[in-house]
Image (cartoon, rainbow, N blue to C red; front, side, top):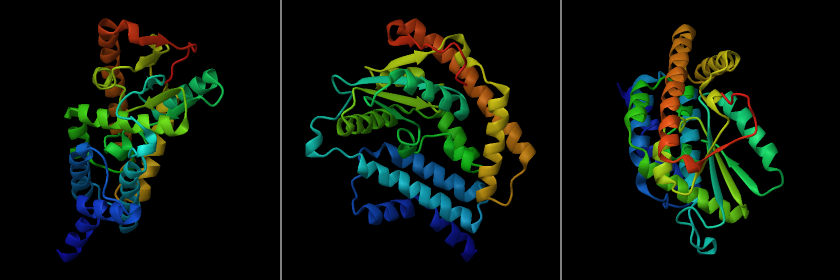
Length: 278
């Protein structure tokens, strides 16, 4: 019993916060939108993930780093007014239901942009510090967190992420920010409301497709990632779950894209690549 309590304390939300405060020498983490997701995530990790001792420490340190990133992106007087999408800074959103597909889409987008005036940000730097990301499901078995994430209203998290994006854009002096995301693939309407100046880039109907080779490779990556943190990983179960997870994300993304097109056709632009980004 005592050992279980100690293991739970190691990943408790307050332990993550305390370590982040010590490491950053700051208690300023910006808007409090992150607190509920972190609480749900850490409880799920403690109760369901069956992490090894080493796995707990790796995951704990990753969570501390994500929270610390919020202090790094906190506005300073030198940043001026970075409270929203800044005038003169274009915000573009591209999404895909798999990480491999998203990486290819982001790479192609960066190639089209050219120069150093475009900053590409992924879930690690946008929704990760909000603790609203599918990356945590790649790390470990966290079904309670996954259910919460599917049902949660992420409006406050998206607005907080927008402010941090604006700070980064100001500090880097870029003219365009491209947010490349998996977790937002089926959240396009929420993104449109929370980021009023954002444009959404599409490569057409193929956005909904999931390339089998990408999915196979991603399943293998998820199994390997979970094995690094837990000794109780069933490859067949993980494979079935991740294929279902990606399929559901892709299907919901089709509906979101159609609804976004109906409501905000002027905010959708077409990329130059005819291939599927998934």
